[in-house]
Length: 246
Image 1 (spheres, one colour):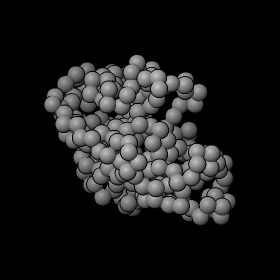
Image 2 (cartoon, rainbow, N blue to C red):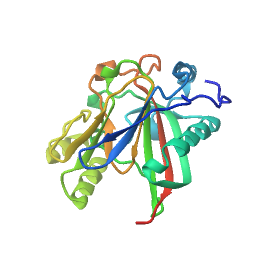
Image 3 (cartoon, one colour):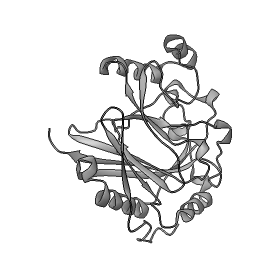
């Protein structure tokens, strides 16, 4: 992928609004990149740059990642500002991060927090700011899984306890308390309702409010791979903007 290219996107993106069961929505764009194969090649050439987050993958993303060069981050962020900012009630840009990611961990290796849906936030994020999350699918086997979105069944306080316990407990203690065994979440459970599902499709991107609980749908963990040419390669974006005062 040539970091200097400025025409990396489809010049006429068709933006679909996908309604969620709780009244919110997310946005899907198909055929978003002009040359998606170039990005797969880019990732393949940089396989040694992929790392487990936090040095060990004990929490957070269940696989390997690396940050994109600043030139690419700027172009991706400009696309967001042009086409998505108003739709997501975002205003002034605060920060943006984009990276390449691949889910690689097998279900038995997951920590409790990786077995639940989650929201995206930056510790210490200023009040009035909001984050938009995005996933761009760069794999052709859609059976590996897309993204599902959820709403808590319990109060905010009770949900916060579950999330906190998922970060603090080991797998055996967490399963004993909540009945959630190690494994990828790809449907509702006793604590979260499924409110929407975005199927994985080659060269498709989805944008959604980072405050919505979500997770990758991993239906075929046996197909997971650290090879960008065959694995669940995605481009993930996290864009923080101020929001209109309510």
